[in-house]
Image 1: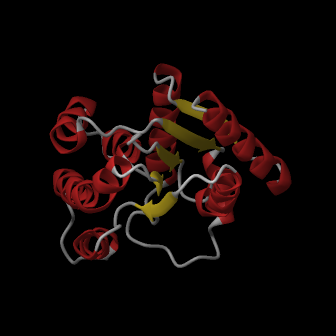
Image 2 (image 1 turned 45 degrees about the horizontal axis):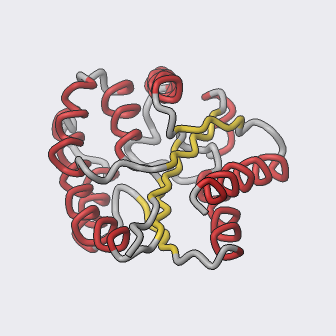
Length: 208
């Protein structure tokens, strides 16, 4: 059986990751490709419980290390229970955020060593890196304005500098990793969705 392909969506909060998921679904559906949609942190009952811990406000300061280790605890469960079995069964997996988010948020934003993030990734999902990562890029101020109407969780309440560092790390990853395709998310929605659909269409065509 042919292994499924693993597609991830990345970008700072407010870029429109959830908005473009239906466009990816349309492309895969048009090619009769079985797929499954999931997210991080989360994706399983245990991982969703960890998500609540991560995003909740606490009287104590959540250390950068604790945040990172909780992210990977959720990821370990998610990979074992959801991502790995589906990919092995031939189902494509589309995930909002994965380890690139840990490089960006805990590495860039929290200033933790990227090597530490890489070592945790190797331990948790050495054989299950994304085959395609769609990175939606936008300037941080615009992204913050887009989500200003939403209730903010603990991480979303971080400073603009935090998100600038996260974006900078995302951009650096996009330059180094051929699997990452950067898309300008500042354009009108119709143009953004066309761009995402075209990237996924090209990816599918290359594997036909």
